[in-house]
Image (tube, rainbow, N blue to C red; front, side, top):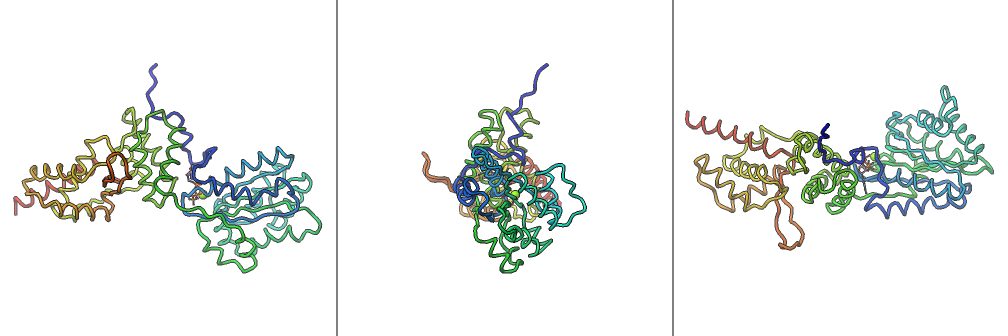
Length: 399
Ligand SMILES: Nc1ncnc2c1ncn2[C@@H]1O[C@H](COP(=O)(O)OP(=O)(O)OP(=O)(O)O)[C@@H](O)[C@H]1O
Ligand SMILES: [Mg+2]
């Protein structure tokens, strides 16, 4: 039996739940978390810690905390500290504290009959269980804002103060609260807010180069060697950067692009596969907007679409598009407009998101402007434009 070729070596490395052993460009934040929780390795019962991890969508909050949690548990066990890390997505439990605590207890003590208890009782039971086992836990409360929305200050107060009130007993529960922004903490009362906000780890948006590294490592794990050429990786990074530096978007894009490559039995993932992948995530062929463009804008865009659909490269230059535009003008019996005018079209298209440009770094060929097609399949774009242009031509013949 002949096995079909696949560009993937191990697709599961692109799964949303996969946590890589290394997170490039989050080393500093990982160290900072480690600093905050260092006491757990030496004097675990003497204090409890509360940390907020914040950053926009896809900046690696969840991945960083899970990586950190797994790492610190290994270290603690080496030192005979019975530490657990429990990661809970609060939104999955509708932000209800009792459901969140129920889940934490089921993880730590699977035999515990959690049903029928309120949040305070569950918290007490949790502390009692940890006392019995001489254990400690880091509760990572992901999408923490949903807990604040659902429960307000009381829940936070309970979580943070209850164990402080246990006299002469060891501290057992530390918190990592994960959220995109700090706005929702404004809804807390002063004391709840101040206990939480003392330690904030902020994850900044990823830039293009960082995304290239992050996606590049994932490509190395998930794809066959040389299945993803450098400029395809760069294109995916550009697109992820356009989506507010969202690494998840870049990873999903590469996975889908790989699927398109496999479906077409290609040896390599091509830029067209990436563009198809984007348009499958965000449908982006805006037919009415294309129809609203001027005739020469349409011809220019057609030229660009032709360049990209014939090329295996992700980027091109304005000069190449200009040549293809001239050919398109001949085909539709139009006299080409000036170079300056085309430059303006390119700028306008860049703003509209049809075509994008980036100034490439100082490579061997010096600085240059590279143009790419962000989010539609070049073939589909060319087809749609031809249809519009043909219709326009027939329309003008009849008028
Ligand atoms: N520095 C990194 N190195 C490797 N992979 C990363 C890195 N940052 C993020 N990722 C990956 O990108 C994807 C998105 O990251 P993650 O889910 O942690 O983002 P998030 O900040 O929690 O986003 P959200 O606000 O939507 O929950 C995950 O697959 C994660 O593994
Ligand atoms: Mg997350």
